[in-house]
Every structure is written in C-alpha cells, then in structure tokens.
Length: 572
Image 1 (tube, rainbow, N blue to C red):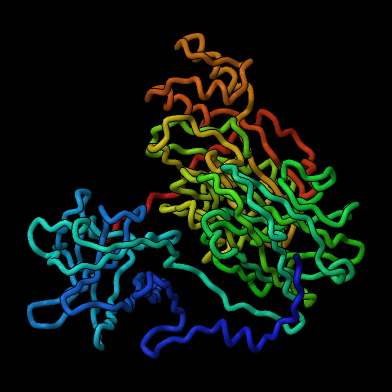
Image 2 (tube, one colour):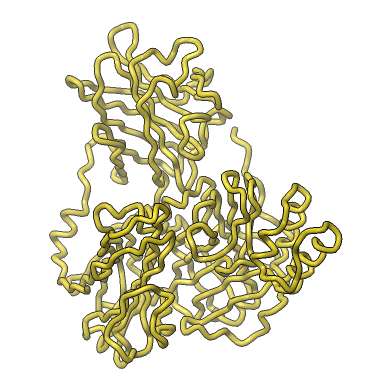
C-alpha cells in the first residue's frame, strides 16, 4: 500500500526539535536504556571529549554502572560507577571489569567533571570522558558502533574480589556516540509516501526475500522529484524478523499492476527494478539528504513502479506471522543542485568467497578497481557523503578505503565494533572525493568461532555478505562495483588440496561441495587467506539496468597497495 500526504512543515519542525537543557550544548543525543533509565550525551570533536548525563531510579544503597565494551559483554568492560559513599552522598569511580568479571579500580581515574542530583529515588549524574584516555584499561571511543553496557546492584562492588557478574541486573545497547547529523529541510511542496508489504504472512523458513511491486502516485511519471528523506516502518512485534529492506525503482514500465510474493518467483521483467531508492538495515535511524542533493525519481515518460524487497530472518521457523513493514520516503519537486546516487561496493553474493569455521578474525575484501571507475566516472569525479556498511551474522569489522595510484588516501568509513544488529546509514564527517581511475576496497572481518561448518557467501542469513552502500553526488550510471575471486585460481586451489593433501575436493565439483569437504587446519586457513589476497578477480562493473560497462572484467588484478595508511598515532 502507498499513502500520500502533504507535509505540514511547521508541525514537523516542532516535533523534530528535541528539548535541550541550558547546561548542555545544542548537539545533544539521547537513548532509552530501559524502563527506568536513559542517557543523553554531547561531544566536542575538536577537543576529543564526550559528556554524559544518566537519568535513573535508584534505591538509597543502590549503585549504577555505565560503560563500554567491545562486543556488549559485561566482562573486559570499562565502567563509570555511580555509588553511595561513606558520607551519605554519592561518588563516581572509574572501574575495569576483567575477563573473569572481577572489579578493579583504575589507578588512572578518567570519569571526570562529576556532578549529580537526587530527588527521592530519581538520580541524575553527569560526567565527562576523553575519547582516548591513554589508559590501556579504558575503552577508546571511536566513530562507528559503540556497545553500551549498564548494570545496577546493592552489594559493595569496591570490596576486594568483588565480581560484577554475580551482583547485577545488567543490559546492553548499541548506538553511534560520535554521530554526524543534519537538520532535515522539507520544502512546503514535499510529499510523503509509505510503501509497505500488504499484510503478508512471513513464510516459516529460515530466510525469505519477499518482493512487493506497486506504483507511486502518477505525479511521479510527469514531474521529476528528489527523494530527500526515508525511514523504516516496522510492524510491532516483528522487529527481530525484519533484517533489512530495499526500495527499488523500476526504470521501465511494467505490464502488470502489482506482485507480492517470494523474490525467487517474481515475474519476468522485474529485473528492471534495480535502481536503489532507499536501503534500511536493522538498527538504522531515519536518513536525511544534505540540502545540496537528492535522489532523482520520476519525470516525463518514466515509470511510477517500485519494488519493495524485505529480507525476513526467521531462525525459529515461526508460522502464521503477519507483516506490513516497509519504508516511508519523502520527495519534493523542488529540485536541489545535484542528483544523488547509490553505488554498491564489496563482494558478490556467491559462494566463491567463504570463511572457514572456528576463526576469531578472518578477512574478505571486495574491490572496486581503477579500471571500473575510469570507465564509469566523469572527469569531474563524485563526492561520497554517506555510507551504510552491511554483513550478516558473523561480521565484526568493516571498512572501505580510497586508493589513488597505489596510495591509500583515506578511510571512507570504518567500524571496528561492527554489529549485524545495528547497521545504520552514516553521514560522513568529511565528504570523500573520488576521481576516475581511483580504486576503493571494502574489507570485512568475520568471527566464526561458534561455527563448525564453512560459512559461504550468499543471500541467506546463515551465509555472509560484505557490502557498503555509498551515497554520493552527482549521479552517474555506475550502480554496482563488486568483485569475487576468479574461477581459475580457486579451481587450482581445490585440485592442489586433492592432489597433495588428500582432501575430497576438485575443480569439477560444485564450489560449495569442495569448501565443505575440506578438513580445516591452521595451514589450510592461511593458504586460503593468501589465495584471496593475491589472486585475480572477476568484476561486476554494472549500470543500474544491469548492463556492464565496456571493458575486460575477467582475470583482473586486485588493487596493489604501495603505501598503506599510517598506523594510528600512539596516545599521548
């Protein structure tokens, strides 16, 4: 179903402007931590500090610990402990909880500028923390995902041999602390459309891709619009099943009015529905385009058809679950200076790229090589202004790097604490300029310690992806710039394993069969890792209609790095 509404701009601005107390800067963010507590924060990028305000309900002898950990665990975590003191008041201590959950008081106290106020059982405490305190036991606050951890209890945590895990009611949440935001600007002629699944029944299978083809209002066919904002609409109760969604524009007219069903059974001709209008993944917030650009949709003689694709994750095989989730988009006929576009970087969704089991960190890299940007980008280049990193369940780190003449220039986006359950579109702090002839690579790192079988690339939630959707302007024809290892070196690898190590593999077998038959050890994992890093690749250098740009895209060399980015400076 598609609904159209003329926006009441003054009302929207009133609801979008958050109330901010006088003693906090204007760029204040907030997060509900539970039924009885919340956190607000603001940061100073230039001076590298962040200020937190915690609001919670506490009994007179109760303490509250708020902190950070790499993966949202309560162990190996850094906390600021708000606790009762011997004077009848409250104090704040910088503590560390080690891998065995024992509490250690930091010799270097970095929870500073502490103040608090109590009214009955309601407590508010404020403190400041540097991004990097130079204390090896303190968490380094970075751009990207942060796993917040918090806990409450009444037993004294500061006694010798106290264990936090034995004493607490604790929880975790994910957010982006050092986020970049812009105020949305919706012209008075803006239109809002909701494209939602028509109350479908989610299949009782592990992974489903559901496609729904419908039409936007006819005005889109006659007048070019800019899409300037979008956000998810998730049906209550289905938050854990709706993994990600994409809205595609069908750039040519279709012969039918609608389709709703599994994407594997969609009618012929729907292949033209490939231009990405909006992409959402679990955890993402509403996205607003900068004032200078918007995604072009429609115009005289164009199609008003769109296709909503929803990835449902149903590992418990629940049956009879109805869903009407989808996306809300805001468009305007008041065109901005530049048309925006979306390019998909990373790896192809196929089983040639795979991850062995029981690996703490195993990298895979997808390439957008210089030959593709030379063929697809104009002489004036493009500006990247936003990025959405994406993997499935085993991804733990993702980064995209710009390379120019063998020199790594900058990280377009990076998330060292990536979570597949929190995949938002992030505005970049600085736009990244890409010339024709530049290269980009997207590196994903996976943890398969909980798996005993090979993890293959593919669409299923149990398989893996490595993707970055980059948002840029001005728009060009390039829509997909992804790679996979060439067939020949992979077949040679399987043949060598069979001939020299008696593995039940071979070039004539299906790729997934050979991978699954390998008995993995450290040496075989190392050889596979080097094979991926050194072998030639097959490139997808595609337009939005699915056609490839002219060029030779088989047996292409990977991007050679002569000068990597310098390592992070030591804290001082």
